[in-house]
Image (cartoon, rainbow, N blue to C red):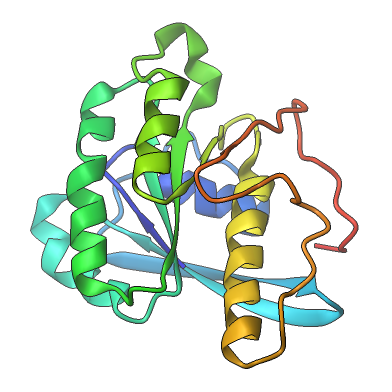
Length: 200
């Protein structure tokens, strides 16, 4: 999975929250590409996810776009308090689709949902963009750990189902996220993380 989007939208902290359950207030802009892994369970199988955090700055674009080719999933992240980061989503999506496999699973992620009082991107606007472009959509807060687990779990489950279908194993069971479909907003917000059946 690749994390893409403008510099400063919180990609590194989403990765840090998901893989280590930590948040770094002093996070600096990523130089080039960094990655982390986490193992999770689907259908009694252990899946090891490799998640690549790419730099959002233009000067690293040639490096980061090389990582799109092998990706099976992407979280396209913007900051709900900065409309410019949302406006650039179109550019990121085009670049991703130009370089990545056509079957890549893409989720649009509105991060920093804790900054509701500074919101500059209406949820409905982003949701409509996701539907038009065949993306799933969720709003997260890496700071408050809101929907981070759900975002990664949902995209990994979708990737897993695609792999199972490709290998001819039929559709994978989707117990945890039965109302998460392409173009449908995920609204799980319990102030923490939603408990799952799997030990992830």
